[in-house]
Length: 309
Length: 82
Image (cartoon, rainbow over the protein chains, first blue to last red):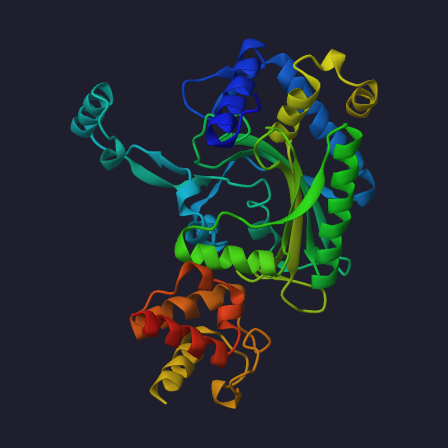
């Protein structure tokens, strides 16, 4: 019998999760969507990270690596707080006295809310690899604009038992800042490269118009507008038989969303536009394990030779 | 018309138009006149406050707010629904 509806999807997710844990690829931590990766799993993620560097080697992109936390002020200025408050991972610390410390420990021991005793720091976990970049680009760009290669760990607070929806995950991106036309060209060029690269890994992929999960009623409008303007595309691949395909990479045209708040200008003196293409490293690795099995040595030779040339 | 005046008032305060709202006729494209995706959301919220209505789910899209005429039709439809 072919499973159908929500029960079928949950069953397929649970089975895939069980396969990953049984094979020791992912190590559960007790928090949904938070895993350790085994040597075998991480070797695939590393191979993907390297592959994406090779695919963009001709782009003369500046490589920059930021830590997985970013300044709170920039998180607010780029509109993330306004549009995706539910996905935030705010970093808090403790600055109280001995009495408050005792109370904090007591609450922890009793499973009570620690929130009131903590104080927010000036940092937040980054939701996308490229977000720490834009504030550092303030000023006038060179004539040809600027291309940047960023990669690293990101956080989005959306606990789930679906292995494809991790709360902490790796993303490798190529970002462009410059004129509106070139920003759009960058997105389209990378969408082509993304489809080609993922296809060479023997993943059945296609690109679809997409929207970000903006928060609330205003968010529904922003999402509809984003789709209407065809600003965002996702590369999707089928992973669970009875469910729509899952996004494993995305291409996003930001218009002047980052250029304006962070004072980034083109050589002509206009507000810079930007675009990015992001490969979801963990999602691609999971799609490979899902399609080709839990042992990379048994994967199709052609896909292996792309990953490990 | 009081409805039109209110719509124009909301647009002048929230749409971030690059032209004076008084120069726009019923069918003028507000997005072409400078309204952005984000400012259209502020327009939507301000219209809800001004008319004490809540736009229905299917109205939360660009086309609903693309011109003064389109906005008036949407506002009147929600007022008619009560």
